[in-house]
Length: 272
Length: 287
Image (cartoon, rainbow over all chains, first blue to last red; front, side, top):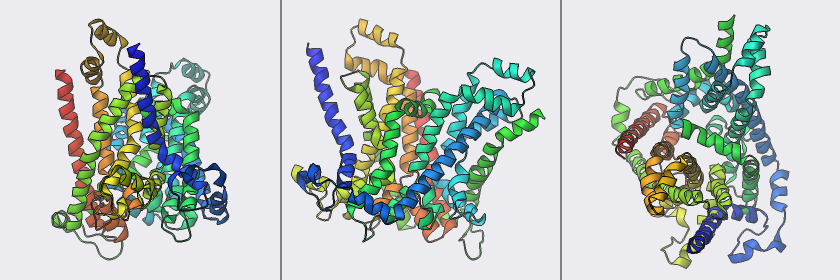
């Protein structure tokens, strides 16, 4: 009895912590639905004052439509790129013996240890010299394949039986056909983990889009929002509406694919 | 033909690795010994940049702020996350909801989080009002406009945002502990606290190490929230090393000098990561 009681008490404490964890996001959502900008006390929660005016303003003024498009466009292309390229690299590392196989695998792990800040200046110079600064190329090209994805795919493919591949090879199927028609379907669970993680990382990404673009036409949503802050013509409700547009898809994706996201995050930690 | 296929398969990673990782890391080291700016002439200056850094008050302040940030957040983040993970693992009613709910802030864009907290910390924002209610000394214009409170305010936000991510990692570690060990401990009459310190914590040492290392790497690089919330101000009180690198390198275009600062931080991060690995792996062996 006392055991159950203490568990209930714990639940209540944990629920209070949960409220604390979610309050800032609830605040964002509620503020985005209010036209008045100075909120005080419980007025934040009054349902009768809800309106979508801030959202309409954000879209009708043009800016944010482009930001949303850029974020979605870049994230989708980068995700597709990672599905193809991490699969290819992971497959080669898992199945092929070639000079430098091990070294290449280690390189993927080593890259994860390199702090991003060390490469921002050289990448900025490189991208500028290549004439890609302030283009979609700068937002896409460096991210089409990522070390964590290679690690994930290599581990997953290593654990698959290779009977079907061998059979197909005897039947004369080419390597590309074996990879995309036989291995790829078997890798669906790992590819789902990879795709979700890459999409979310890119959708949220700030540092690189911020330093590699300089005109609003190319801003992604996080960069656009950071730039809008402090502008005279943007009020808090509108800024929070923009923030909600950035945050809500991520939260929805998380609630739908919680298992895959958890797996993607813990894969490196537990196995590595 | 077969070899040729393998080369095609690995070429995307090989190219990315060379062009966007290996080359920049080496190039950056080279830059740090020059006075490179994107315009004008470049010459080799030896270790002048590094010497200059140690007499540059704005760099020293950034380094001090960064250290304060790292050592002021990591213990809290780690301990709070560990406690929450242990409690969730006890399968108290609602544990699934708690696990999911705690995690949500950490997958939300840092820009969004920073914008929300800027408003909560501002004059008459909810956290400003809360400070008044619970009676802590509150700067009149909001937390972010006082040299005393700006950095701690950002640190509190960072602890809040990161907890859920580490809860998840700790939970994965706890779930991978063989259930037999717990059963044996229970049979021996070990209570909750005893099980925590004698079973759970020793068993998750590898995860604890991983958490400390990645949190150190991440925290030393704090930038986004600084840029969005304070731009290093007021009076440099929230400037961090990466903010300094950004400001010197990409706003003032002193790229050689900024690269030296970036590399110095790289070495510091590497040093701390190695130290943590060494300390914790030794501790793991004795227990």
